[in-house]
Length: 412
Image 1 (spheres, rainbow, N blue to C red):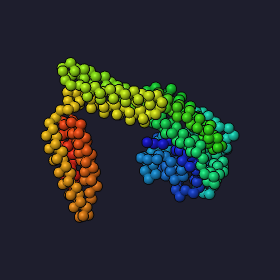
Image 2: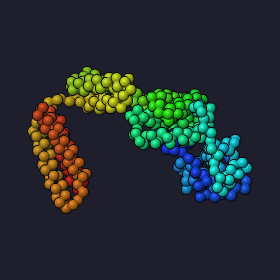
Image 3: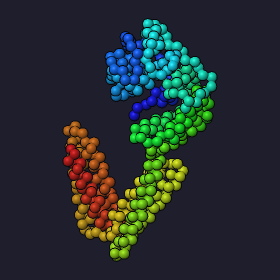
Image 4: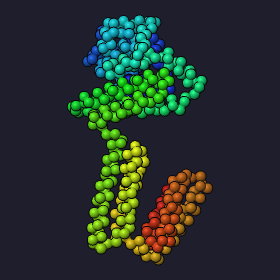
């Protein structure tokens, strides 16, 4: 996933209050520009410009074409965006991405020993939606002196729990903003209307900038509030562009399991009408209904991980209920079950001996031991079922145990 310059800058801030600088004059890349460069231009001078931008922190691309080591001779949109960031940070106006006479002279001054023109520190927190991504990056970079002081204080006192909470809220918001940007880009390529999504994304960027502004001033409560607002607006942007959030997916999954329960009830009713034994199936389906009710409650409480886990349990119970149609809990042959358990015990003993021999020979037995554990678990289930006089289940479990034991030997 490509990280936009705006998000890359903020993510770095959230990761550890780093001080941002643009060491252009320290670059070892030297180019000879004899013409102006803009969209559509091709040539080795474009490749050199990309190398210079990548070398000085104004990365053309973090991966793929244009990334460090994969510079090209083509001046395209990513190159233009990188030039805009370089121009903004170094006082070249207007910062349009056109690498013309003014930019070429600035470059010549910088590589010959000059220094970048400092960016004026804003006195108020400007709205992100009214500024380009490059301007936002430059404005954030201008907070270096304040960040340095805060970093020193943080190193001496340690990060508070509230600061960590603010940092985490900002990180989550930034990830959602990036997802929204990607989704909007995909929707735009598909010719879809993205105006609403872009408006929400602008609001999210306003909020995350305000969050970072508050964070740098140790106002962590306010930073958390702004970060939460940023997440919500970015999530709305993501949805408006056609994206499906994790919460949406979980909600759909719960609805699918509810449909499965309804379908299973129909099958159980039909089997009951045909005179089949459905008592066990009914009990299992009732358990599934309880699980899905609990999943809905967890979803309403915004505990999405728990909701998904409960829905998965409900789905498993539905499948068990369908498998149980026509089963007699006390069915199966007692002697067959006993013979199967004996065979499983013998197979497990053989596997244990084989594993011990392999260990003595210095062989790797990890996979075999895992299979042996599964065999022993299945054997325990078989014995439990036999005790409950569920001889059919006991025989099935015992056969599974025997198969696992044989697989363990084969693994060796």
